[in-house]
Image (tube, rainbow, N blue to C red; front, side, top):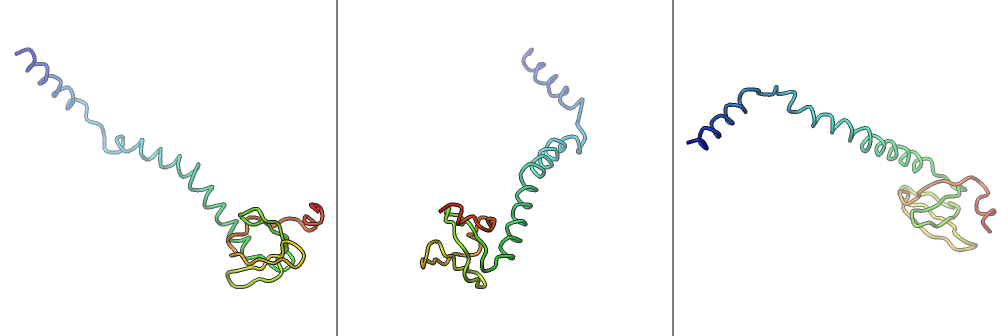
Length: 111
C-alpha cells in the first residue's frame, strides 16, 4: 500500500506546478538564437561575399581556385572562366570554383 501511495503522491506533485507554454519553449528559442548568430548568419555573409566576388570576375584578375591553382583569368563566360596557370597552359573552371582574387603581381612574386 505504501508503494501505491508513493506513486499517487508523486503524480499529484507533478501536476502541482505546471509550467507556462512559453517557459517550456524558451530553451528552444534560446538555442535557435545562438545557432542563428554563430552558424547561420556568418554562413549567409560568406555566401553573399562569394557571390559578389564571382560576379566581379574579369579578364586579367589573378585568382586562386578551390583546388589551390594560382593563375590569371584570360576569358570570362557566363558560367566558366579560362585561367592561364602557366605559359600557354590554360584551364577552364566554373566561376564558383574561384576561391579568391589575389592582388596584382602575385604570380610574378611566386616565380
